[in-house]
Amino acid sequence: MRKAMNKDKKRIMLIVPMLHQGGFERICALTAKLLNDKYKIYLVVFTIKDMFYDVSGIEVIDLDMGAVDSRIGKVLNVFKRVNKLKKLKRELNIDISYSFGMSANLVNVLSKTCDVTWAGMRAYGDLDNKSKSKIIATKADRVVSCTKIMERDICDTYSVKASCTVYNPC
Figure 1: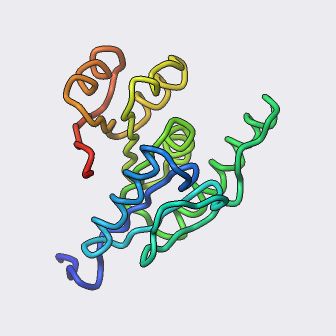
Figure 2: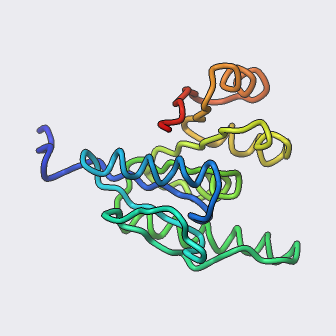
């Protein structure tokens, strides 16, 4: 039986480290605003500290797990974020989780439950860390780029399940 459109909107989780000034943060906030009428949007941030972008009307979930300094602390932080996000995805029955930025992408693909994971690899700087990029590109259900050339480069370099280009909505 088909789901009623008004009652059972798809549940989309957008994941970003923070909503401080920055390019992919701006794109994430704008994406949340653009999709909010048609889908149930949850905007998950690792920390709400120094929030800059207006996300009024969007349900924002603060994991309260900002950046840490030490190398071991960073590794532990990834595992803590993965566990917390995995629990959230299950509780909220997320259909699609779409992350912005390398740290959010890594946590997103490692916390996969029944959701479809999208990883936004939107800048060539994202590809500098080859080992992280490989994990993200091969584990994501879809890699999202902002140019066709970048999408082709990622597909030529890694074994991606699926890819697409979504131009910046700005």
